[in-house]
Length: 134
Image 1 (cartoon, one colour):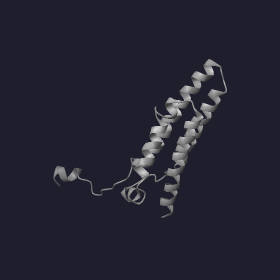
Image 2 (cartoon, helix red, strand yellow):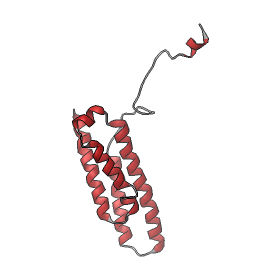
Image 3 (spheres, one colour):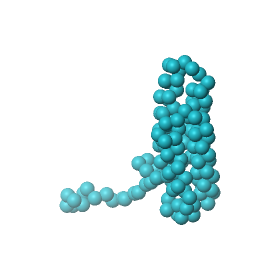
Image 4 (cartoon, helix red, strand yellow):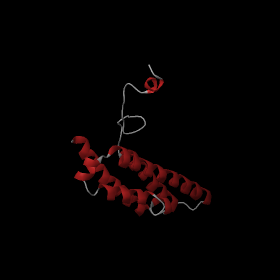
């Protein structure tokens, strides 16, 4: 056997991610978004500067997790047929990730911005569950 053939894989596999677990759920993004909103509410109700500093730090960390979970759904779960069937899906993800970022909950302490983010995640979730039933 020649050396190049020795290194050629005998079986080729492909997967949508590094570890094809198949476990996707918009609930992960929703839970983190609920946390962000709750932190904003607690921030508004508390005047202690140390509490407020900690609240901002935790809120920003949770907002990053929202973006992460949305990106995983957007890039790993949803495929071309989904985007064809639901043409608003890219726009929803774009709006949701922006609401999770600096121009949204990450840069705001207004619980109403958290509600907006939760609304976008709910729209994504409805589509997600429709695709799971198909």
